[in-house]
Length: 347
Image (tube, rainbow, N blue to C red; front, side):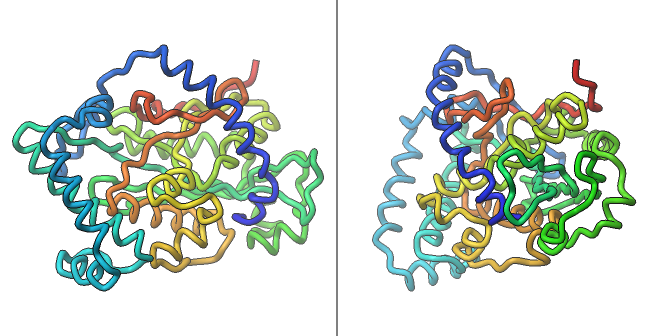
C-alpha cells in the first residue's frame, strides 16, 4: 500500500513541522535519564547514556574516526568496492551508500576498541518490531473515508544478531465498511472471505499484545516500533481505535519512521525514501508480493537490518500525543516502548 499511502496522507509532513517547535520546547524542559538495556546473554554490550554518546566528542577516538572519514571521502567507487570486499562487507549500493557503510565499519571498530579501554560507545534497542498495516481503501478515497485495518503484521528484528527472528500476521474484519472494494482486493491480495473469517480488531490486538508479552518485550528486553512512514500509527491505528471504541495502545505511541531515519542517515531527499527506492539504493530487490502487509514488513525490516549493518543508530523519531502527530527531537532521552497491555475501552 506504499504508493496509496503516499496519496492519502501527503498532508502529514505539515502537521509534523508545525508541531516540531513545540515538541523541542517540551523536550528541552525534560531531564535526560540513563537507560541501560539488558542485552541477551549471547550478545553482551556496553551501555551508555544518550547524552554521553550524542554530545561527548572530545575523546581522541572521534579524531581518528574523522581522519578515516576524510580518507574514505576521497575514494573512487572502484576503491570503495575493493576495500569493502577486502573487509568482507556488502559491496552493493550506490557510491554514497558504500561510503557510509565503510565509514561506519571503521567507526564501529574504533568505538568497540574504545569501549574495551573504557571510552565512549553507543547502545541499541534489543529488538525492533516492524509494522505495516493494510487497510480498506478505494481507488479514489473521499476525504472522509474511514480506513479500517484489515491486516496486522509484525516482523521482529534482533539488533544484536541483526536478523529477523519472528513474525506475526492476522487478518482483521472491518466493522464500518465490511465489504472490500474491488480495488482494495486487487491491491492487497486480501479477499472478502479472508476478512469475513477474521476477528474484529480488539480481539486481534489482544493476540498482538500476548505475542509481544511472550517475547518479554518491554519487560526483559527493550524494544521500539518501526514503520514505513507516519500514517500506520497516526492515521490507520488512530482511526481504527476510534472505530473500535478502544484507547490508543501506549506501546504504539512512539515509533521509528524509517523514511526519516533513512533520509537523515544517507543524506537523501524525501523523494528517495519510498520503499522501492530505498531497496534499490541499497542494492536490494523486493521479496514477496507488494502490498501484502507481512511481505512489506519483511522488506522494511531488511532495510532496517542493512541500515544497522551500515552503522545507523535507529532511534524513535515520531510520536502521538493528544491525537496529534509530533516529531521526537534527536536530543530526547533514549527510551524503549512500554510493556504491552490489553486494549481498554474509551471513556
